Length: 300
Image (cartoon, rainbow, N blue to C red; front, side, top):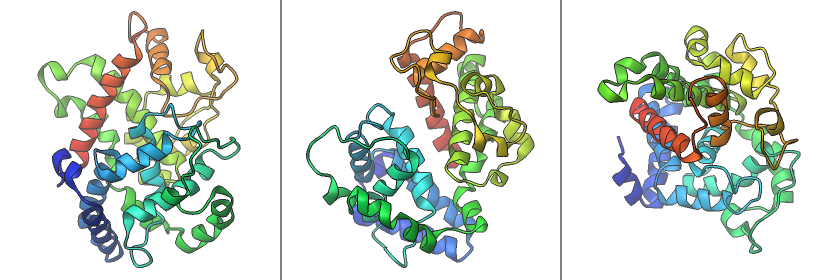
C-alpha cells in the first residue's frame, strides 16, 4: 500500500502502471486485488502526486471550481473518471485523466457558464476544446458505460465509508475519541455518501441500514428540503440556497452543493447546538483533514 511519501515520488509511468494493474484485476474478477489498487489510485489522485498537482492546477483555472477545496474536487473527479477508464484502449492513465477533465466539467457544472480565470489555453493539458468535448462526450459514454457489477467493483472500498462513523469509538481511543470529532465525522460522511451517489454510484452499493445510521439527518435537512428515507433519496436532493442557511452571503440565490463550504457547516453546527458559537472555516478544515486521514486508513 502506497503511503504519502511514496505517492509524492511516483513518476507518471509508475502511476500508469498502477492503473493498468487495477484495470486488469477488475476485468479478471479479482476484487480484493482490484480494491487494493483502486485505493492506491484514489490516494494518488487526491494526494501529493504529480498527477494531483496537474488536476488541481486545472480546476483552479476555472471560475466555477477556483474556490473549491482541491482534495474535494479531486475526489469527485476520481469517482467520475474511473468508471470510464479502460487500459486496453489507453494504458496512459495520466493522459486519460487530463483529457477527461473537460467531460467532467461539462457534466458536473452543466447549466453554468464555464469561464477561465487565466487567459492562456489549457487545451494542451486537457485535450479537446470544450465544444469538441461536448460533441464527443455521448460517444465516450456509449463506449465506456460500465455495468452495475463494474460499478460495485470500483466503489467497493468507498462503500465502506459508513463504518467509519458506526465504528468510530472502535477506531479511535483516548482524546481522539470525543463527541465533537464524532459529530464532524458524521457530517463529512454524509457529504461523502451524497457525493458518491450523486456522481452515479449505484445506491445499492451501500447497505441501507448502515448508511442511514451513519448519516447526520439534521445536516441533510439543513442543506436541503428533501425527505430522505433511503440512500436512493440522496440522489434527488433539493438543495436550499445560501440565503436560506446563512445570515450573510454574497450569493443568496445560489443553491448549495456538497461538499459544502466550511461556513455552511459551521452555521449548521451552531444552529443545531453542536457548537456554542460559530467556529471558523479553518477549524472546520482541520476537522476535515482528520476525517480524510481516517478515510485513507480505512481504505488501506
